[in-house]
Amino acid sequence: MGAAETNPAQVYEDFFVPGMFARWAPILVDRAGIGEGERVLDVACGTGIVAREAAKRVGPSGEVVGADISPHMLQVAQEVAASSPAPMRWVQTGADSLPDGPFDAVLCQQGLQFFPDRAAAAGEMRRVLAPGGRAAIAVWCGLDRHELFDALIRAEARHLDAPLEALATPFSFGDPDRLRATLTEAGFSDVEVEEVTHGVSFPSATRWVGMTMMAAAAVMPELLEMPDDQRAEIVEALTADISDTLDRYTVGDTVEMPLTANLALARP
Figure 1 (cartoon, rainbow, N blue to C red):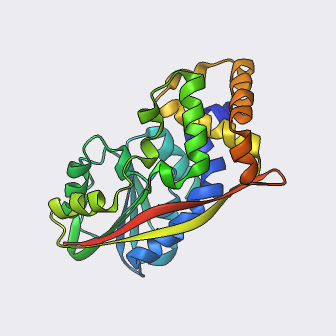
Figure 2 (figure 1 turned 30 degrees about the vertical axis):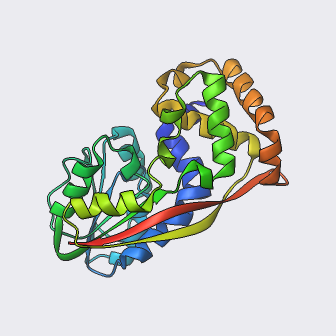
């Protein structure tokens, strides 16, 4: 595994963006109804796929700001978006202290479940909105709705001796009523939550297992220092452990599966 594949930000951009997040970004931006000339904030922007999609819609008369706590994610985001059709800027900050607006729209794709204080983050999204603005937020439904991720995360917990709850964080905020309540309590008075299912695809079953394991470095930083041969052994063991489930989602060597998310549209 090369250096790029042990850099979580580059793994995110090179593997998870084309396979997963680029497929979902237009859905979220459509949900928000982003239009020409608007000012948009992308919270927990990662390497900027939602921000880049929004930039296509706002054009040169608008502006897109990407905010993320990780300088590594922002560095990749800035490099990838160098030829953006709209003005873009990148701000390193947590979700509890967002850049001042006002913004016509605030977007957050698969970030809310990771925030230590979801209520504070939702309150900040509300604070920076312009009058009449809107927030569009996507969070995955629970692991009970995602058989293949459920199998892999449980196998990771066993083979890596890691807490299941931490590894399952991406799928930890799947209750639509909790999402609606969090936004309502933050001051949004008009909250609509819609369940959406959309397919994702990865070019290699083994690479999907390996790259998903590397994503666990967010809770297990020691994975980044692990020797390549040891990491390869674990990937092989994980792949064997979930083979029956993995086979059901593998076409050739391509992993194809549906993912289901709750998409909220909230207005002050």
